[in-house]
Image (cartoon, rainbow, N blue to C red):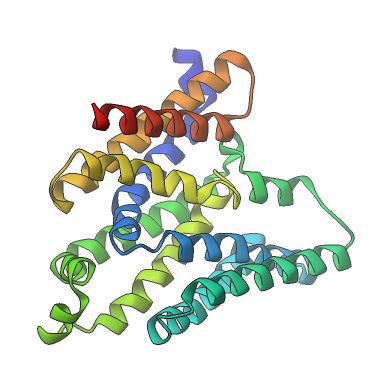
Length: 263
């Protein structure tokens, strides 16, 4: 076991930081039904990866800027147009990925670093990414702590929140911007393709076995930590992909929770 932790030290730290993000923004995503919007940001962020590769700028910087721009566009779309959200969100998703594909083609093809952003490689998370992840976690914790009651009111009754004088629009924009930062902090570890599963499954399970957001948030974080650590152990034991193992462990726990809840 000591060999495991020495070999996977950075991965272990990444698991802790990811679990904090899952606990905070993942729970807010679930309550406000932002999962599809978050998926659009995640997949659309491929455009930022492609443009960063094409223009030769740091991948993390390019992806962050592009993801934040997508979040602003999606915030405007989803707040001002309630009837066709699914179509517009899907359009942003497709356009972002198309920009990325064309930019990657124009830059000369794929690289190993690019593939780690697409599919994740939690075993190869650099120290610089851990610093980025820690900073985003601090933002998430501060945001949820500061606006906890407002976020709760919006999640359960948006019109009531407006009557209480809560700036629903500003919090909507802020939440999507933080989701964008969370996506970017996670893609090196989990990948654009799988990130939303990790941020959706633990909060969903936690919601089924708790009765308040205050209980749901820490349970989501604990579940995410357990699933991620179990996935790392499985990947170490069988020499298979760590990221895929984490998602499969999470999916298995999801199925078990569905069965247990029906009994």
